[in-house]
Length: 81
Image (tube, rainbow, N blue to C red; front, side):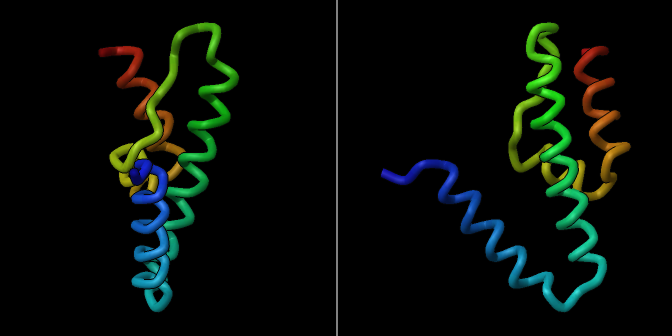
């Protein structure tokens, strides 16, 4: 009945509501959005090489905390493992 996308959208709306009054929360939210966008674009560009990352809550949290360096770390971990 419910697709996972609806659950992620509801979680995202809840996080936005909870972090409206926190500067750190807003920074983490923007880092996560830009990090997941960077992963999405890199997945499109690197499709032929077979190097891709899944977009899920864990990559969102990781990129939310670390930002673009987190995206680079995730790709390096993907290459090494």
